[in-house]
Length: 182
Image (cartoon, rainbow, N blue to C red; front, side, top):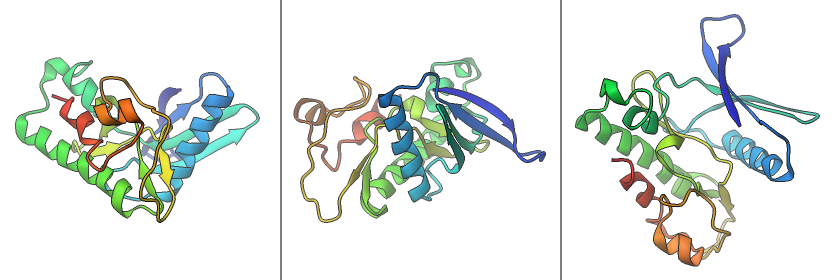
């Protein structure tokens, strides 16, 4: 998928538009999962869905624009030299991200496992408030399920070892990804 920003409704408000690069069954499934999950959840630490388009083979998702991009871009990318992330700000970003993940795991109905938490999927607004994003690999957990085995998804190096080896997400599995953000 490719990300672009644009003005929304002729206002001074800027939005982000994520566009599917090429259509495939796999990409279509990830698009559908992402739209379904974003339509279900509302939390200050999760990226908000503004709208979407699924017409023919065109697939667009409209989000709030995050001017400070991602944790990854601040630490290792185009903003790394600016050194915008002191330790106090990093701690706030980690807490914001953890609150978003905790909401998905414990309060969303049904519960949701993100399956691709990493520095490039934690976006930062103009005040460096973290918003967990990119729900294409997410999994909805049926109510009452006590054990869930899923096909391993995500980015190697950001997966909890027990999840990568056994396919069984544990309550603490998502924390491995946040530890990799230093």
